[in-house]
Length: 248
Ligand code: NDP
Image 1 (cartoon, rainbow, N blue to C red):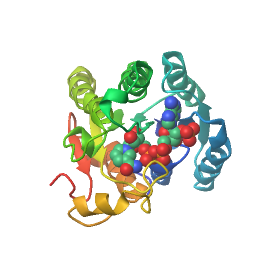
Image 2 (image 1 turned 90 degrees about the horizontal axis):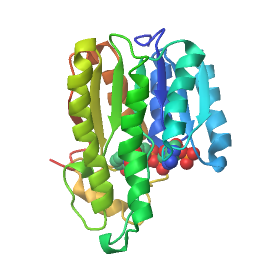
Image 3 (image 1 turned 90 degrees about the vertical axis):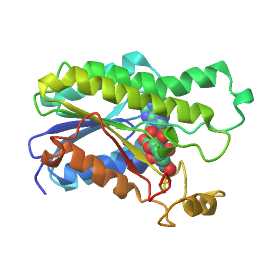
Image 4 (image 1 turned 30 degrees about the vertical axis):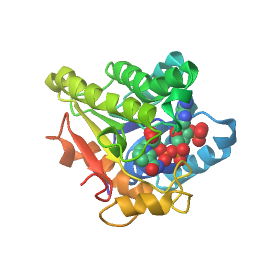
């Protein structure tokens, strides 16, 4: 497709999983795409994602930037905008999955999780707002666990993802007058390294869903690409759950 031809996008955490599927999906519709990653171990994979985008005839840019560090988050946004002289689409996707009894969560883990999920999304949006034109898009990747928590051990994760709902609605009001839309996509159980479809609790997660299945990262990317394209122009301040019916 070519619905995003001439657009420039930045996806945080694009080296693998859902983020990499979003990078490929946006490029598949014609966008040039920058993405961040953080682990030295992911460098090779990030290069693979760059090659996939280039094979689609689009430009790609990989940026090492830790979502837990404010300066690196805004630096990544500035870097992407400077490279292409524009930035039309921001996708806040980078994430981690802390798990365990809430009594055991350290202050460091609490701060780091809130920094990567909530603070980074806020700061990236703030940096991007200097560049986003009329028609610009901000899409946050939350979790269906932000709305419904069906098992213990994830209070911190659920809290950090629920914060994106407030950010999304607040920014929709701030940026609406400029013609910029802001939405949050809440995936359910998705087959990635974070949550493999053959993992220990995968059958339990499948049983929670109405469709009795895990999502493929492309299932989440399809909704992000829709929101980023012309079909998303009247959708803002919304939370869209893509979870095979788990929260039904
Ligand atoms: P993965 O663990 O497969 O990939 C995580 C991505 O985020 C990687 O690209 C990773 O980079 C990047 N990342 C992690 N920490 C940082 C950081 N500090 N700075 C920059 N980048 C970072 O996860 P998923 O693809 O499964 O998850 C993507 C998003 O979707 C997350 O926000 C997650 O919470 C959410 N989600 C996932 C679900 C699932 O079932 N998989 C369900 C609901 C929501 P690197 O490769 O360098 O480590």
